[in-house]
Length: 164
Image (cartoon, rainbow, N blue to C red; front, side, top):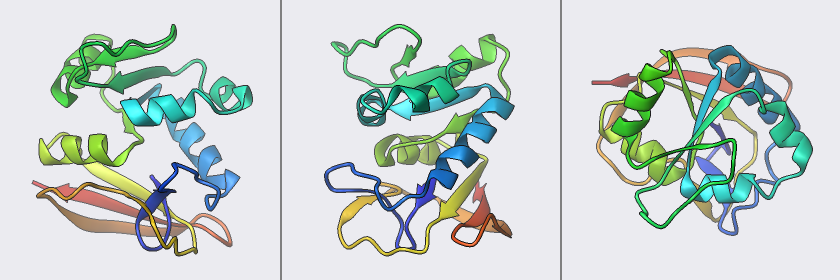
């Protein structure tokens, strides 16, 4: 997840203008490595409005959207799951053993609370965003720091293990 220093993933209007393109490139590399990405409904609705070039970067990766809304449907090229557990059952059957969960706050928190996240990688931009969407909704889980890396002059990467 790309975040500000104070743990914001987007402004209140869902704008991510404070995040550098290097964060997107890092996510794309991880997506190519795992072959799969998971988004919540709100993230999907935002991402599908992006410039086509961004989605072309991940066109070969499996993309799963989580929504428990029975009326919600997706455009072609995406899979729909109704719960975090359903996502893993679906992807396991498709041969995936590692996946990337890349937002938003509600879906991140749901996966963490259900114990379905083993590790988290944060790319931290050196900005503070006054008001915005937090990385997680308030839930009960703890993280243990594994590694700190400097990606470039602006991005620090923190790698955590979820305490279970």
